Length: 371
Image (cartoon, rainbow, N blue to C red):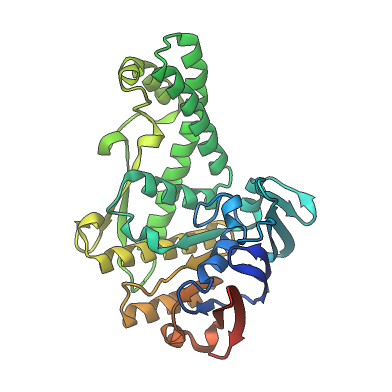
């Protein structure tokens, strides 16, 4: 088979798993077990088949199993379109994360060229209620799946901005120092803006062109302080940074740029801002965006991403839960879904693998079971 999915995943001293081996196929995987058994740890391991710090945003050291603290290692056999790759990622005690692809040392960004992973976890349920930072990260993760270099642009921008903010806090006024940093920020910032715009357009298009049980969200990229317009492109950003220096010096930080952007969503059918919707509606809107992202990626990359849906049944009634499973199967995505009991996945039946995770004597055990 072609497509994008993990054929095998091995966890060694990762979180609660001393050693676990999962042999998989392209079907969704329903993972159930009691709270604390280690279900989300499996999803986190899969998320590390992509660039970044995974779905928890944890440090490499925090991923190591306690109390051994001997480091950790993940090995995945990844079907990526018409090719098969062996991916290894690990960290030694006190060290940073390492990656090899087919036995060769690779930068994390290289994972983005062969793998696409997206996720929805419970902490994201309040995405529309909390600060803009979480929404930017949500958008940037999706943007990185369309353009793997987006993550590098974000890192370049943030490093230059930190250096500029240090100058501002220390009261430096040398225009030459600012100019060099602002040139870096403008170049990286323009790339960030373009990638975000393209991502929003692709997702909106995928939502509006599909018949789905989940509500469509109208999306809008906003500038600083919710403004609909602002500096766009490299030249305008460079000019805006230069003009904003007096105001930024007073504030001690950079007040203009893509780091101040926000993602606004409106429940299209009701013309209601997402932040004013019910908890269930907000969850349904998020699910809709994740599914639309999958459809858009299937067109752009050639296969839908691997979906990580942690406790996805929370705030979804039985009808919407069944609809979600139908849409995942129709999409053809290898989705990893977690829940506390097998009854949450009854509607999937033999269309999915069913895996039970148990905690015994402080060690997580994994076993495939019949649906």
